[in-house]
Image (cartoon, rainbow, N blue to C red; front, side, top):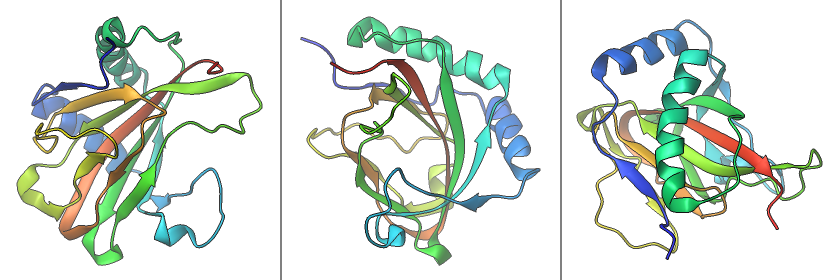
Length: 179
């Protein structure tokens, strides 16, 4: 049986997290968007983002993707997009139930594996829980430096942040269209 998700708690060092945060803090954040804009987007996603392209971060994530894919056995390439995200309580930051695959994509590639890295210390915010829709688990995804990898078609969300700011890095690794 294939695994549904892989997690490594507290695995990314504080030094690497600081380096990622320094990169993100040098650039203004913009409002997040979604694939489809049916209805008010703020009801679905409310966060600030910055697209990253730093090779060292991609290589760091690729190591974890390769480990995780031993369980998933999904056809993927070292081709990804990365996004720094802030969910702020004063903006009612959240991302409601969604999956990461753009089923209407026309480029012959689909998001296959999704990666989330917890950058905030869990004491810096309240709420903002990462959750899967159809998977019940007792795994604590909040420790700083935690890496979560899962097939991009799994529905998940970040619940509303009610205090502070939750910061994370997400990435999506591509492969040939799902069949």
